[in-house]
Amino acid sequence: MAQYAVLIYANDSAHAPEATPADTESCDQHAQELVAANSMLVAYALTPRDMATSIRADSITDGPFIDSKEIVAGFYIIEAPDLDAALAIAGTNPAIREGGGVEVRPVHSGGVVERTTE
Image (tube, rainbow, N blue to C red; front, top):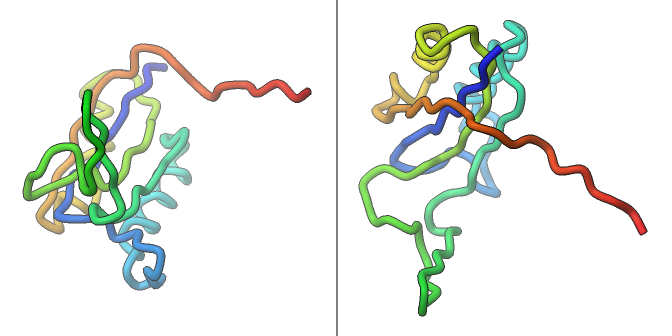
């Protein structure tokens, strides 16, 4: 089955270090639903924009790489038989109902990197 990355765009991440379960409830519930449906392979919530550091060719600055109203708040990888199915799955993300959105992109390659121990 094909894999798709779902990038979550929101005004900011709900996953601040001091976030409460109430702050992340919609995100956590959505993740549980995708796991129960056997769709989600991996998911990562990012911290708020004020914790980002960006690097360009000759400078390091505080904040997200692009200064915009919405940032990438997190991402997850799903499996789906085709793009239409992936869009249907991604369309249930709570960020859409909460004023943000998602971007769905086919995964070309990659996976967990196996580490060697010395």
